[in-house]
Structure formats: structure tokens, C-alpha cells
Amino acid sequence: MLPTQTTAETELQKEKNMVSPSVVQNIVFNNADPNEPRSINLYFDHYKGEPIYRVVAYLNNSGCEWSVKTGGCTMCGTKNSRLGRKISDAEFSNQFALIRKYVTQFNAQLDVPVKSLHVYNDGFFFNDNEISPESREQIFAMATDLKMQKLVVETNGIDIVKDDRNNDYLGKAVKRLGETEFEITLGIESTNPLIRALYNKPDSFEDMQKSLDIIRSKGATLKGYVLVKGPMLTEAEAYADCVETIRNLECWSAGKRFRVEFQPVCHLPNTLHEYLMQLDHADPYFWEPPLLSTLFRILANFPEMGEDLYTALFARIDRDSPWDFWVNRPHDDPETTYKLYLKLVDHYLYRRHESVTSALEIAHEDLWLKRCERKIEQSLEERVAMVKKLLELSRKNRVHLSDYLKNNLANEGNFWERCSRHLDSLK
Image (cartoon, rainbow, N blue to C red; front, side, top):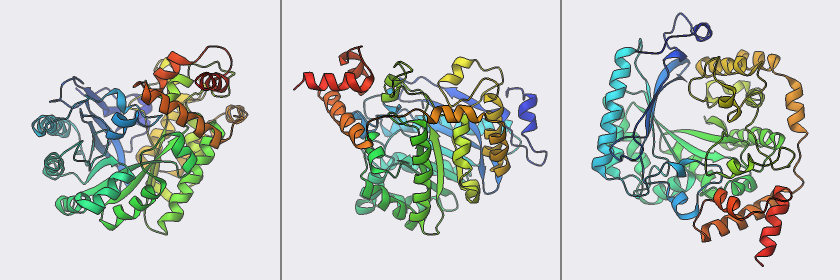
């Protein structure tokens, strides 16, 4: 049975289109079983001017190679889900069989079929050490057999540049998929080299830039993830960086199409910002998710981008969702948070700029101004230098950065002082 549609959600549904946000489903499997994906999710989306349904499958995987070798990106939670051993083609095949099964079931229940399939392996999609050519071929076959209009995968710049030099898996995949659009999502996060270093991104700035042109030249569609408020950034810095990053991508694209999904950071275990959430609220480095209205402020800068700019959603949320749910995700005040979320759903479905302007009319300006008052004394260069030193220590001790901080920092003083004292003690 599909969930019952609420009155609020009904208001978001156009009579001429049967796509409804009420049908969201999250099917979670045994995350320790390599023969099952971690989850298969039915979501709504927007594609070529109209709302559609999409299925997002998160594969059980061996882990991102960058994360395994270095501890990974400071804001990334995929390290929590990896099995830590190579997944065989037979095991991946069993995962794909379950994805096919559930897409077929969803289509039997829906008024219109699923049109977009997202398959994420939490790492480098074109890296043979993470997922083999044979398993990738099974993904391509699945997308075409299920008559998907679009297949979406995620990787990063270094993966694309290496593939272009060696195997051209990307170019071959575009030809193999035929009429099924192949969308390559890159974890760009920021076009500021310092902020990318703060996040410990695996691809160099140059590789990230090169990969944008390579993806287009192969005939695939380019989409960049842009991060909103990673660890050790204030709200004002995060907002400014996100807007600047989108403008830079627009400039680099030189009139060619580019797509952006900006991702607000939420609470995730074993990340740097998880540790920073535990600090005293008066600490300059205390971290909290970005305001929900900040996402609309970003969108408001780019009305001309239409369907090619949107923000990630956080699955299905109801009016009566407990406040504990919201505090780990973007939110404003209790009075307006759910209203803003409905505006975000409306924008996600229809990409109407009116959804943005009307959301900002109900958002409380004082919350934004209060967030913008928070300042960090240390420059970005100083913050990057500190993070690099701490990452090196956590790698030597073979623990996550967050665990290293929990185990080694004293309780006295603010975060920066505690880190500085700890580093001084090791000299």
C-alpha cells in the first residue's frame, strides 16, 4: 500500500500531472549483506519541464578508495556504510536484481512510470577497484531494460580525468545507453581551493575543472554537487561560497549547459561537523545545519537557471515530524519550518521561481541576520592548515578525524585553543 496523501501534499499536486510527493518510499535492506543494496528509494523529481518519479539505489559497496586510504572528505558520511571488502560481480548482480524488482513494483502502483534511475556506489564510479566494467554494464542494461529516460551516477574529477586518459568508459557508456541520458554528478562542493582543502577533497582543482569539459565532450550531462555549509564555515561564508561557486560554474561553462544540485550539510556520524555540533554554542566553531531559508536565498540569485538549479530534499517529512528530526537538518523556527519545506517541495517538483520568492516572504529575516553575526577569527588559510595537521594525526592513529578529536582534545577552552594546545604538546 502507498502512504495516504495528506491535505498539504495534495495542494502541491497539479491535476494535469499525477506525480505526487505522497508516494515516497524508503526500503532499507541488511547493510551487512553484499547481496542486497543498502536501500532503494522512490522519490519525485523534475525532468524536461515536468514532475517525474525517480528511483535512487544505494549499493552495498567496498568503500570509496579515497576514504579507505585517507579517512575521506571531512564532511562525508559514506565511510559509515562501506563493507570494507571487494564486492563480487555476482553479489552486485544480486543487488541489481532487487533494484529491478522494486522498480517494477513501483511502476505497477504508480499512475505514471519511473523515468529516472540513480545508482550510487559511494565512491569513484569508473574505478575498477570499486566497481568492475562487468557490473557497470549490468547497470547500463538495467537502465535501458527498464526504459529509463535518464541514468544518474556520482563520481569526482580525478576519476573522470583518469578514465579519459586510459579506458574511456564514459564515452563507451554514453553510446551503450543510446537514448537514455547519462548524467554524471561530480562532488564539486566548492570552486574555492581553500574550502575544497578544508573538505579534504580527493581531486585537484585542475582535475575538477578538466572533468567538466570531458563529461560534455563525451555526450553525457554534467551535474555538480555544491555543498552548503561544510564544517568550520559560518552561515554567511557558506552562503557566499555557494553563490560564488555557481557563478564560477556558469562562467566556466561559457554558455554551455550545466546543472547544479546544492546539498545542505546534515548531521552525519564520524564527520568533522558531527564533532563540532557538540561544542558550546558560544564557541565560534560550533556547527549547526544551514537555515532552510538560506537554501531559498541561494536559489533567489539564479532565476534564469530554471530546472537546472535545485536543492536536495530530505526524504518525506510530515507536518507532525518531531522537532528532534528537524534540528539535525536545515530548519528555521518551529512556526515556519514546515511551511518552508512545502515551498521547497513545490520548487523541486515544478522549478517555479515563485516558490522561492514566496518562501522568502514568510521566512524570518531576523534568524538570517543573527546567523550572519557569527564570525570566525582565523582565516581560511589558517583553518586549512589546522585541518591538514589533524588529518595527518588521525591517519597515523588509524581512526576517523572525529574520533581522534574526541580522544585527544582537552575540555578547556574553545575548539581552536584546544587544537592548538594539543598540537603544541606533540612538538
